[in-house]
Length: 141
Image (tube, rainbow, N blue to C red; front, side, top):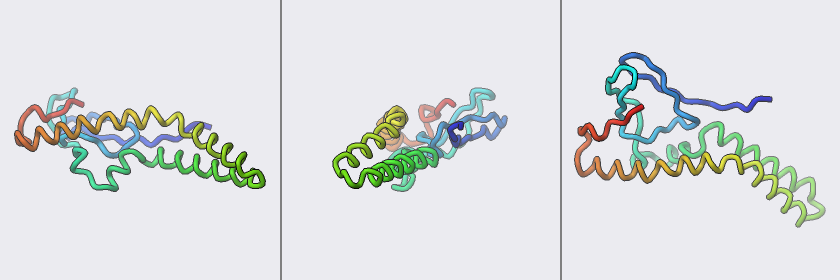
């Protein structure tokens, strides 16, 4: 059975070239990107970390696919604990191990998502001081 991933995409408004955004619908950035195909600067709907609402910050780390896998890992751990309910220590240990093994493949994803936040906060601080119209704040796709 193949794993199901949901990819979010955005397009250049001038040439229509499609760019894929990994798993999260939330893009961190200045909101302006330069298309590598045609060179036009377009608005992509990005926001910097300080501009996001609490729900958007949660969705940045837990998009649909990650949330589904996390819920499945919790459910499997609860079922494992229920199966070993007569032996409490064994059930908790087994449930914890099942949860950790289920979530371990997602550690690199969380680390990669986390590394974008300090860059976003620094861009936001620079943009607040310098103003948002500078070409420095146009990201390449």
